[in-house]
Image (cartoon, rainbow, N blue to C red; front, side, top):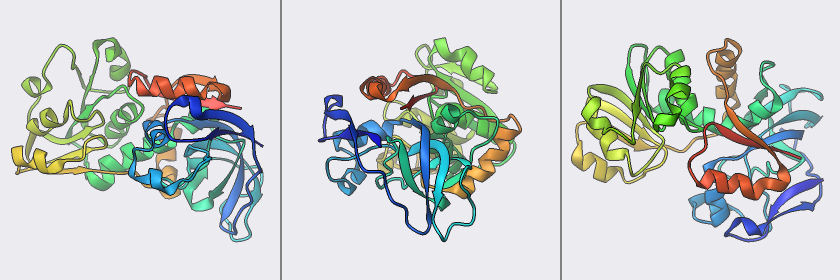
Length: 310
């Protein structure tokens, strides 16, 4: 099979498409013929060797976790899927998922049936981002209907899903992004929009129940300032919460790491099927353009998600 292989830590010049052996499956796994795979910031960070989970790899490696495709073989312990099922998921995160390939051996527990409303490309764009947003808002943020929620970087791959999920759960949502993305963020359902390039969020927003900060060090302290006492700050991009709590000791603040969950995807599927969550794919590229995809991600100026196909 064809796969995008990384020969060493570092730049995109270390990528090459190669023919490698098709994976075999364990009893609890299925073999998926990948129709599309998604890329995420975690991918390029892992490529450079800077993430804590980079140590889980030895070169040459196949990166990637997000994929969608068709089941072509089923382990003898698998009962949830059959050959021919269209599935999607985030495979093995943060351990090697090997999703940049034509075939992936995936634990059945990491997958869900692809919503029929989504194309394979849209489904491949979703798992890591939508699971991150869902777990941030529910498992960690304890969002409830009526909460006032601020989503930092609301037009990004994770942020645009956070806006939709928060609205679906009954929150009042404020989204930040650059002015050129205002119409997009409002189309997602945001009740208020703030152009962070022209305004200081902390001067316009206060008394927030929950901040989901997908941006990082440039926004984290402003995020803390807008919270009400006992408010909750959930970040995926900044980890030194001791510094944050030194400024706002009266709030809850944590950095989270998404975990794989087919069960969570099945819950999210209902929201997708009901039209409450839409996946925005900014670009579909051939796998041969993986270097371009990573460079666009590293610019941090993408809207929605980038997906690739063989």
